[in-house]
Length: 231
Image 1 (tube, helix red, strand yellow):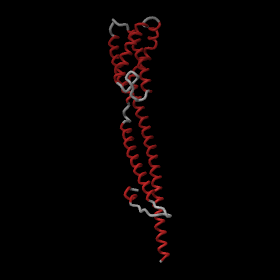
Image 2: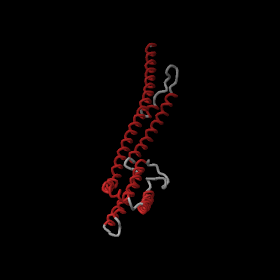
Image 3: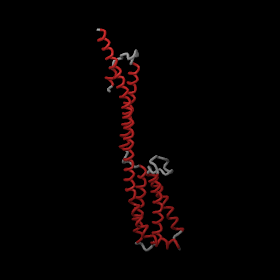
Image 4: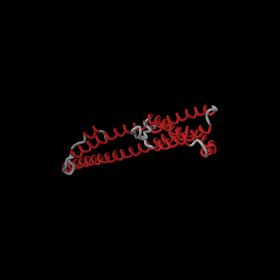
């Protein structure tokens, strides 16, 4: 029932009691319900707008872009006789390992913003700094383990790591698509849940108004019947 119709309902006594207090309570409840509907609409509209915004993978995208540049640079070094290809391969394996760890942590982290040094995957600064640290640590590890059995292991796993690194480089696009799909599904479920809750409140309120209207009609009919009997 619209507000104007509700306010214009008569304050007729039913059973010797005035309905004004009940009517005012229904008016206040209607205003509260209308306000809640409007606020929920704004909240859910913003939720829909943010469905395609996946902040926690943006820095991963930048990290993998820099990772790909290092790969292109490494290809150039392989053709240079000054560098030992086994060193380059070991470096790429170590960097791929670091990238895998960073990606897995980033995909599992929430989108809540933190201090940039506290694994804030919404910050591009974190991606740049973590990549610099990664290439420095990998270079140090190559200097420490570039001889003996480690090189033999590199030769055994190199082909598999090379294929895996290609998959890793483009994995973020797939993960982003999955995360957007999950957010969209959750957003749809939230909308349905909120809508049903509001509909239930509307039904309850309408039933209360219907009860009041019914009481007023009964009172009117009783009054008319009394007049007819007196005549």
